[in-house]
Length: 297
Image (cartoon, rainbow, N blue to C red; front, side, top):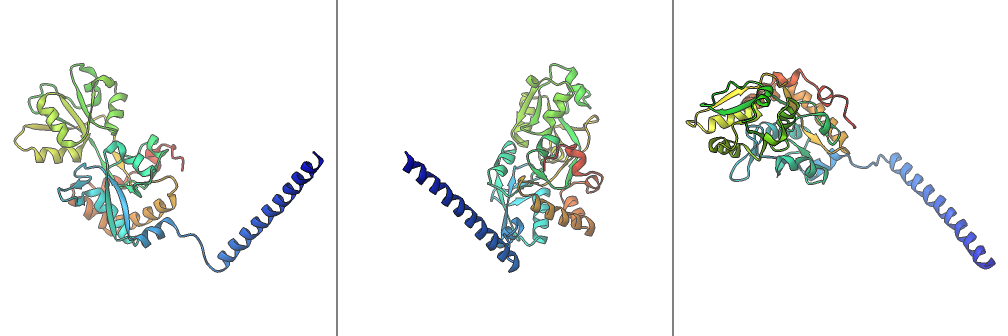
């Protein structure tokens, strides 16, 4: 027993000395790296070296447009591409996802950022690092023109128990409707715009709630089908931002700096107007306003 105690003490002693030695070597190596100007590459430097950025996308025209050949466009990707080009990253590669899968995909490392009309709201601010607002819009209702009711607010939807209301799956519209008193049993998740229009025509839903720019795009596509679009009166302007992983705040900050330059030199206005967005809306809002003090980063 005495010999075992002796050897145990020896092992502890040498383990302690080894730990001190390794710590010293790490300190010397770190100091040497700093002295020689060496440092770990930033996330932006890694993207610059790789030559492309992976952007999480959900097909939601005109925010995001993915054609039959897989080419990516729309207000969000075009703006994000312009920002990253100024940052020295030439290529944008889209990572297609359902809307509800965008944030999980980002957190799992399948994309470097999200640019797909993801509205900035407190719950999301705790999960991802948003840029300053880049695309803003108002909410709208789509209905068949023969709808006998004058529906202008989410409260109007709450007062009529016969209405089934379509909302984008995982979207802000569901939260707005619930807050106005529309029961969850009358909210129908809609996977994409065309599906929502088909559901309206089939009578599965009587109202489709979605961003006004998306609604107008669908009305333009479905000409002759007698749809009406109403801007929601009791819903605030909502703004989206490009979303980054919580451990990529440095990349988000670099993105914000370049985004501000594009807003100042006219590039931002040109891109948004090309897709039917009002560039003045984002200038009146900030990330802090929409996060409501809930940003955990």
